[in-house]
Length: 372
Ligand SMILES: CC1=C(CCC(=O)O)c2cc3nc(cc4[nH]c(cc5[nH]c(cc1n2)c(C)c5CCC(=O)O)c(CCC(=O)O)c4C)C(CCC(=O)O)=C3C
Ligand SMILES: [Fe+2]
Image (cartoon, rainbow, N blue to C red; front, top):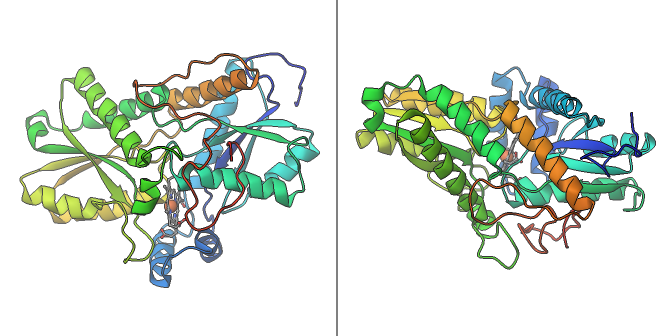
């Protein structure tokens, strides 16, 4: 398969790597997975026990790996459709197939130059730099130098037109089920993973003002809400809320939590909520547990109508966007002038991260795909 001599829109890459978070697939994998995720982190034992219960409620199996298998197949199909077939590899941070094993196999098969697609759209330590650190740690563990295996990453894509469009399509399909007479008392809630305030404060370029994590969500949400109004004639008031808070209760994390906000909204006369988890790219555990179980339960208790919008998942517009981003990265690697596709006129994140961006606030660690 690997054929470095092919000359197409993916040149110089001989493979694509899907890099994701990982998740357990059997009950006995839950605790080891959680220990790996939280190693060296300030996550209390009680929180871990609580999160273990979430996984056990779903038979100890997270949906995330199956979703990545489907995304991988969809990317392969899209590459084939464009006559740009490449092996699509898959590696995780926290569960099998581990990134290090994937890169070892890639090297053995002679893949020299790989374009990395991470399953996180936004700029933050957790969603961007931590994956870059994973790439550095894995290549280091394998004793690989940049001459042996060159890894490039696509840029954060929260504001790529295809990601925004896929989320809009999902929303348009879902609000078909909202009673038009209730539109004025329906609130559109964009949801993302809460992170420590300090992580949001430092997200974005090292010399910037930070808070790019929230800013990108607000910009994407604004575009999606506007698109909904244009497409359906239904204008819904919208806002950004958070789920899946972890860490020590003494550390400030982004708020409001969706459950707290639902109570306030119900008290203020809202009758229905449309919950769009634009912060995630698939309906993984944070979505099926924290939103479909916990938030839905809160809404029911409060008498609120509740519609949860699917994430981008394997929506063709999203899959096409990811392949467009790989093509864009390839053109950059060929030193061509590239005008990055962007859904608004705001800041565009580069595919080679700035020095000091989205820092690791605990310890400085080597990271690939950046200027530091
Ligand atoms: C920004 C962000 C994303 C989105 C970007 C991206 O997708 O990367 C994300 C995704 C995910 N987070 C996930 C799971 C977990 N995250 C945890 C803990 C944490 N997440 C954080 C942030 C994020 N996380 C942070 C700051 C922590 C605190 C500990 C630390 O500083 O790292 C914990 C520990 C227990 C707990 O929840 O406290 C678990 C189990 C899964 C897998 C779901 C499945 O299994 O289907 C996915 C996709
Ligand atoms: Fe997380």
